[in-house]
Image (tube, rainbow, N blue to C red; front, side):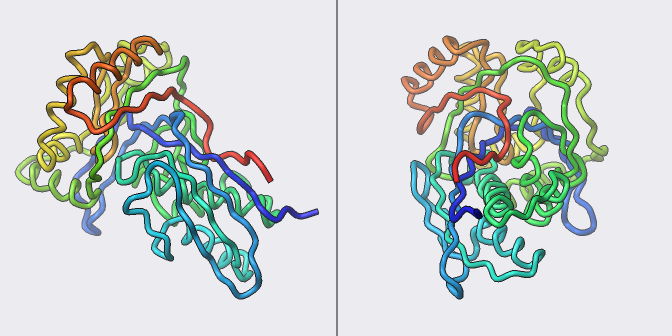
Length: 305
């Protein structure tokens, strides 16, 4: 018997590497991004609703400010895309319980879209392959395919051409969260402005990072963290430089602005070190709030029906 409702749990991500190529003629940039899915999750529940009701959405949880509850939400677009592809009327209600920060560089919107695609696939028994889900995801946004698969992966092109990264071990993260998001287009614009006079080479995967992940060497991974958008994010939000400095001073193995920011991710040696750093960051007064997580974790996954 077909289910009436499906709940999918989907993780946040941090970038271990984000290398940004020169701005292309179409306004976009070629990227090399190494993603890791981490243990902060949104739960996306999709429920069938009566014929003619269309797609509706409700959002609750810790981080909801600024999340649209209308057709501009990427999760709604994901549900509608499935209906278009499979030629049926999409009458569903989407309920998102959010723990992933909004506009934080952790792909919360992309995660919700990925969760919706996986839930729709299960709810309507479409039996799509992982490749088909990734293809639909890439139509919605460059981070969506990774949020479907999770783990640790390399994204190339616009970030949506994925290959799994050979990675061993568990990595412990402390995340310094900001109460005010940063606009991704604004950060890319500032990056272009700051690099306008420079000759920017095509982005390449960091060999040092790949070797460090394979060796499960957290110290080396910490030293290899890199983000070409970090200077631009710090230019738009100067306080981020202080947050990075404080975390390093308190013993983080590595510190990086995640994606376009403003979340700052600190890699630490273990859970105890993470707790110590979280307490120190909170006491310092330079961060809004702090979360701890580990990775890699799996991507969007059905947890109940």
